[in-house]
Amino acid sequence: MGKPGLFDLENHFAFYGAYHSNPINILIHTLFVWPIFFTALVLFHFTPTVYDLSQAGILPSGFNPVLGFNFGFAFALFYGLFYVILDKKAGSLAALLCLGCWVSASFLAARLGYSLAWKVVLAAQLFCWSGQFLGHGVFEKRAPALLDNLVQALVMAPFFVLLEVLQSLFGYEPYPGFHGCVKAKIEAEIKEWQDKKQKKVS
Image 1 (tube, rainbow, N blue to C red):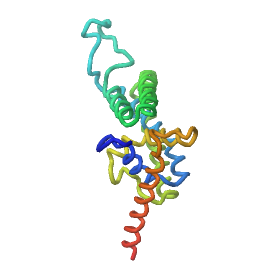
Image 2: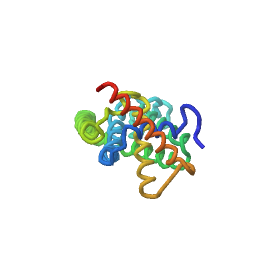
Image 3: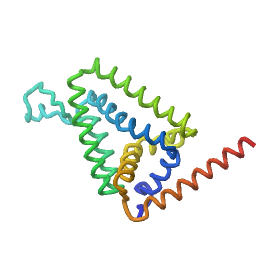
C-alpha cells in the first residue's frame, strides 16, 4: 500500500502523471529528464567541497579529488535516498542511476574545466527544457507540473520517467494495484482540470 504524506508514491505519481498523459510528451520527457539531472551535476561539480581530504592528511596537500563531497554529491544523495524511501526496488535502481550520474558528471566536469563545462551545461539545459515545454504546449496542451508545484515536479520527474519505463517494458508495479489506482486518480484529476478550463471559457 502507499505511504502517507511526503512519501506517498501513489499521490506523487498521480500528480505528475496528470500533466503527462500524452504518449509523445511522455517520450520527450523520457529522453530529456535524466540529461537535465546529469548536466546539473556537471555544473554542481564546481561548488565548494564540504570535506577537504587534503586538510585531514588523507590526501597530499593541494590535491583536488575528482569525486569531492560537494553540492553535487549532496544533490544526488538526496534524490537517491528519497527514491529508495518511496519504493525500495525501483528506488534502489534510481539511486544507483543518481550515483552513476554523479560519478560520470564529476569526471566529465573535471575533464572539460569550468570555462567549457558551463557552456555545455547551458546548451544542454536550454535544449532539454525547450523540448519539454514544446511537448506540453504542442502535444499535452497543458502547462508543465512545475508551474503548480515546482519542488514536487523537479524532484519526482526522474523517478516518474524511470517508473514509466519499468512499467512499459516489464510491467513493474511498486505493489499490486498501484497502476490501477494511479490511473483512476490521473483520470479524475484531468477531468477536474478540464471542467475548470471549460468553466473559464464559458
